[in-house]
Length: 501
Image 1 (cartoon, helix red, strand yellow):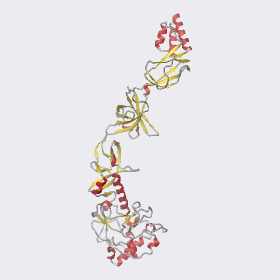
Image 2 (cartoon, helix red, strand yellow; image 1 turned 60 degrees about the vertical axis):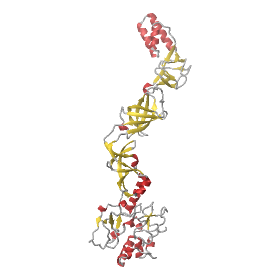
Image 3 (spheres, one colour; image 1 turned 180 degrees about the vertical axis):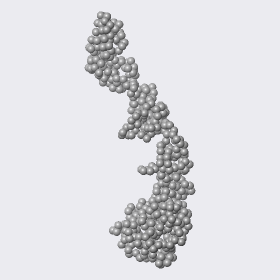
């Protein structure tokens, strides 16, 4: 097996190259971090095995831990490996921001240099740092990336919710019969029929009422005031109206039939009697409900319920009234939550003179909430929602971006408050944010796996006069930890020569 070594290895002395190869081979003794099966690596010469431990040029886009020295499929997902090159997207060379020891990533240098074994320090570029990304202007233009500036001001909160129309429960009237008898002359035929206040609904023939009227007539004939008063109270208990009682007290003709009239104008919600039906005391004959005024019950989410105040202005849009907007105010906030939907009910009272709103119609509502303290806020589309964290893409200028974790607050139409993680006047990406975030996440993952994601200020500065100790265990390549060895019964990952590295 012949291997053409890169110029930097061929130019080193044989002793140094052999030592590097032995160190690399020692690092592969741990099969869990080997770049190929152990039995295959054991057949390589020291120089061949050292060549395999140079930086890989190809990496799986779905499994960044899988690397190779030449094109080929990923052993896990079978996708083609992608080439990793230290160039920007527009093809121009990039300037490294510092250099890192290839054996010990914690040792850095601001200028190019070699380590004590003659190996070049690895350049680290700005977009290889965790959370940062560099994109060429031409690519940004093709993606249609738009920006927005974080603003600090009071965030007007308009609470949006859905609701439904209900009867005004304060206008419900029940017509009940208090004496035994039979229904006659029923004028209402079905539930839903409209009625007017004072309209005759039906009559009841009752022998009990006829007997009470006869008693009143006899009391008047005797002139017994106590008996007259008792007879009048008995008729009133049977439901006889005051006008009829006064007429009988003045000597009017008694009648065995009692007329019932509508107490309010509205519609008949329930009709429980029919013509000729026999009724008993406390029988519900019908229920009448007014349509003016009418209620709108809006279900507000638990998070926004505390912002709703009695008297707040409300705008309503009904599906049955396209193009028309109704206005009203909050009349009452119910002091309870629905345990299933976690919403609270808010009541709005509206005039309904033309009966345009009918019970059970759906409406959408916008409730104005009071303005709070000034907060930092950005467009809703700038925030990437996550299960445990939320983040925005901050534009650093010159095509550089940073994925930054933030904490969000309340929403208001197209804006959302940022409680921490972002300052006013910082620019964020408003369009194309998911594409940039995906690229930043992938590059950060690759950088962490290759040991290039650490802050250079946290590493040790290279000491030109420092000498190496005899213990070379700390010089195991950090990139080897990112390599995964396939099972011994599977096809090993290919390794190519690095003559063109």
